[in-house]
Length: 496
Image (cartoon, rainbow, N blue to C red; front, top):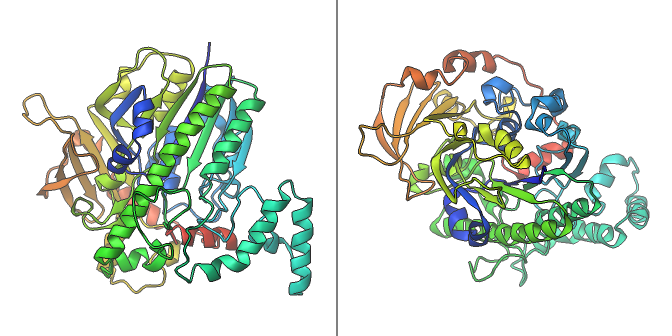
């Protein structure tokens, strides 16, 4: 008998923070994959690799090709692992501004719920209510008074009238309140609660079997204090926001003070703790609402740099394939028989779809998913002609940030006395590195050697040579004239 499966993506959650601040999920897990690695370093290529099992240079979804014309519906369902689950109803829920109907991701699902307009990207309290941004996009009424009345009329007619009106009030008052050190945090999360509630409603509605996909954005920037956070984790002022300093000011100008760095890390930890509580609640409620067994795979699409030495002092996940970005959690809650409690072999997200299909069909763990070498790559900076947000970079500095990078993780050789995987990384600037990893220190790396030889077996994991692929991809023209709302959301998230 097939079972329900749920792919739960905790966007931007790094492995070390998850291990410390998600103890409930760790306890509930029936199988922990301790050496899971993302296929790429940011949302769109990483998700596409999860769905298709291909590297970015194979499926073509990456910074050099992703623009306003991108449409995931160009992929057929059979191009993804969902094609191997023909009996399952496909339900998607996402707070990610890339993983939404604007970019065609809804076409992959029988039912899709878009919560990408939340308090993290717009002045809205309730993602399930009507938003001012949504209304203003459609109206051409020049009179402010008539616009207010028009919005109120639509709120009254909406399924959630009270929450829609609250969104309107917050759109006016929220920006003003945030300017002051108010005695209370923000009230509404970045979609986690409504995603959970809607998933439970879908589970109750049926039919089964169902394949759920969820993307939670609550650990993604912009970070700030929320009412849902455990105030025992930090004492960050309610007026603080990670947007006080943008990613280029952090990474190029080094403007992060000790206080800013600690606030950033503390709120990030609190966000992961909140996700831990939220997803455990999701698991309990879905299991109670369904007749079949449901297996949950909790993973992140990539991690996040927090300015540590092991992150090369970097913040965010732009232009980086550090272990803070690439090492992800992967927990399987309620697996069928045949799955080890702890799995310490290397596992690539490229096999995540195959794993989900096996779980849905109650097959035992397939050892072929664990390889001696696993690849990952990122192709460059997102944003076309405005990749540096209008900042003037020298040619050398821009080339460094826009470099294409490839990584191969390898198990230690039988002759080696090392127990940790080996990490080799090379890029379009001709640089080649080897990093030291430690199985007991997730998300950590240390430079071991430069100008290393990249084995032919590493290069053979990629269909095209790096330099040739980057040169051809960079020559492609991009249309970055995004929809105004989409562009604003991507700026809020730190991508444009």
